[in-house]
Length: 342
Image 1 (cartoon, rainbow, N blue to C red):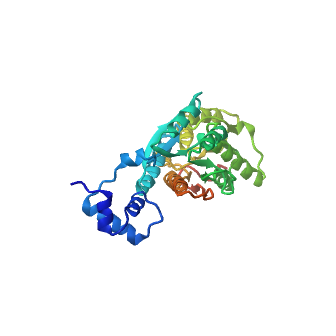
Image 2 (cartoon, one colour):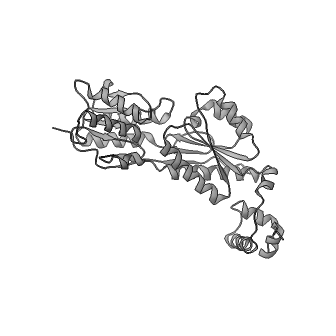
Image 3 (cartoon, rainbow, N blue to C red):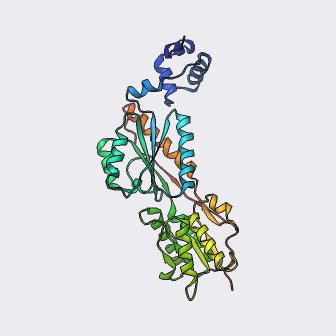
C-alpha cells in the first residue's frame, strides 16, 4: 500500500502537521525532528501529493519574469532560482514577457492569479515599473524585485539590489589609473535602470579625476553584440578616437572587440576594452575581456529565498518587515586592457 503522511508521522513519532511543515521547508521545525521526518519519508518511500497541496491553494510555483536579450543572463538566473526552489520545496515557472506589449500588466496579473503560483521574481525592466508594482501590491500578489541600486535603496517589499553605480565607478577609475583620458561609454537599453546607473558611475569617476566628459564618446544603444560593433565603428571613425571603451555589458564589449579587429586596431595596445557582468562572452573572446563580475546565480538564489520567506510569513499570519540584499559587481582584470598608448 502507498504510504500516507500519517504513516510518516507515526514512524517519526511526530504529528502529521510537523511532517507537513518539514515537507514545506518551514523553518519552525528543529533539525533533529526534521531529520527524523526525512528518514521516515525515505524508509516509507513516501511521495508528497503536490496536486493536493495546490488544490488547497498553497501555491507551489515561483514564476521567473524577464524580458532580456542576454541568454547567458537568463540561464544563470534560472540556475540560481531553480537551485533555491529545489532546496525549499518549490517548483520554478519560467515566463518570458515583452515589456513593450500593451497588455503585459494584464497578462502578468492573470499569471499571478493562478492558484499554483505562490509569487513572482521580477527582473528589470519589470521590477522597475512602478505601475506594475502598484498593481501587484493592490492585488496582494507576493513578489521580489531584482533592481539596479545601492544597498540604502528605499524600495518597498523584498528587493535584491545590484550596485551598478559603484561597479561602473571602479571600472572607470581603473581605466583612468592606466592613463586613459578619452574613455568611451557604450550604454545599454534605456528602459533598464542599470544603463543609467552605470553611466552615472562613469561620469562620477571622470569628475573625481578632473577629466572632462566628451559628449561624442557617450553613446546610447542596446545590450547586444551588434549594437557594440556598430557604435564602436563610429567611435573609431572619429578624428580623435578613444583609447578605451567601457561597454555596459560583455556582449557590447565583444561587439566592440569585433569592430576593432575589422579595422586592424590592436586590443589592448591601441584600444582597451572593458565589459560588465563576467558572462561567457568575456572568457571566450580573444583577448579575454576585463569586466565586472556580477554573480547572477547568487543574485537569483537570494531573490528566491527572500520571496519564499515572504510567502511563508504570510501563510503563518506574520507581518515581517521587507528585506533588502545587496550585491556589488567586482572588477576582474584580464587581457583586454593595458596602459594608454603614449
